[in-house]
Length: 144
View 1 (cartoon, helix red, strand yellow):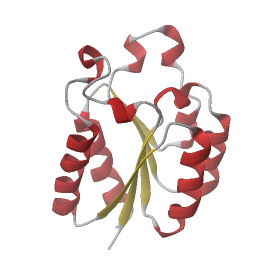
View 2 (cartoon, rainbow, N blue to C red):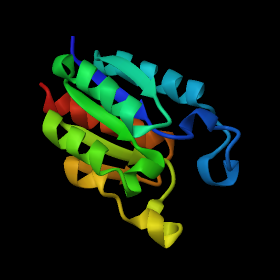
View 3 (cartoon, rainbow, N blue to C red):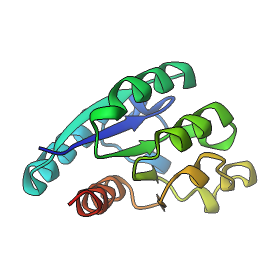
């Protein structure tokens, strides 16, 4: 069975508490539940990881990627400056979709640029939890 890595970056463990007017009131656990339901529909497995530093995220990706069909990643603030995470995603060469809950282009200027996006097949921004589900559909199709 295909396995998709779902990786969330800094502060996403605070979903539901952190700026609910931007990120919504649902928690990371609720996001994971929604993803599990979609994974069941698509007949894929998912492995979840949330880390607050690029080093721990890179370690997870390097360890888990060899057996994965693709990556869904919300790098959070790391998307704006982590060349190390970009290099990792580029080197893994798996179908990757970068997801952002909020529309990063409608927020502060510094958030509108993502250095990690260049390592992704696509970027979904501003669709909340739905962005993750759409990314799963895409990766499941790519690995058929």
